[in-house]
Length: 355
Image 1: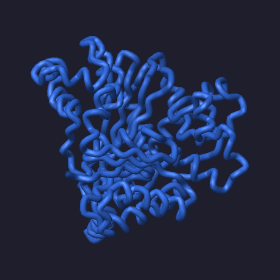
Image 2: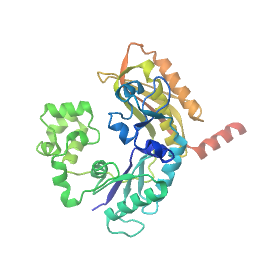
Image 3: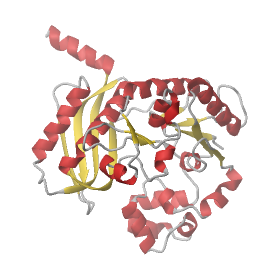
Image 4: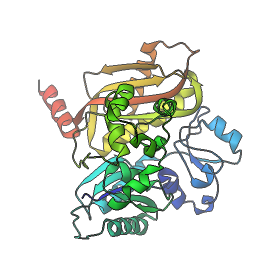
């Protein structure tokens, strides 16, 4: 039986900023630019009590909470702290699968400290993170990734939730289907049309029925309903692309999406830098209120050199789409593909100069 931990830092960007500004600790703080069309990159827990959350427009946020405190994002600092946290992970296991700057899966079945209890490993990691960074992390411990991720959110913030193998069926039976990875509003609506609301409901449906309604994803739903997830924790996966999306709190005109593109570009570039990668290709995605998707991509002759080039590429793709200013969007996303290691990029540059 595997022992998987999902670590999720609590309100990471906001918490990093609040370390140096303790006077703001109990105030509603959000991380966002001061651009007129800014969207929230992260919200502190006091801010969340006012209903503020990531991807909400600042215009809407200020209506809900006029006293909101806005701090400019510092992605270089967040990457630095994330690196400290990953060094702590490496004391316990080499099987680490980062999902973002503030989130990772760890397989501690055979950990480097020889600790038999995964719960003990999770407790030590959380204590080490707090001692080293002053930040709190929530952790989920379970026999697989699906359950570990759900568990990490169970007692947030600063929580630890353990699902033992013998507790799996009891834990998942009343679990709302929206907790399942990949179940968004559209899939949830389809499930509710079938009178399915919990994993317990899903257990009663035969596989062929789920496949009829949901195609390939029907099989995955069937496995999740049994608490099964065979996906391994992949430490050194070769990523084909890196992408980030923002779902807006309300549908926005294209002109109001400016700050979202900025936040997404910074996040994607941070992911590239962290992995020492660059990319030849850039793609953008926009989802309309009726869930129709508009996409465009372009491969460039040379890999991206810096964040500014990525931002320019996004503007170019948007201009080529020639979208009507009357269109509204509920989600925007960007991606980079045809990734290349920085070392290879330098070699390519060297050979192009030689020839």
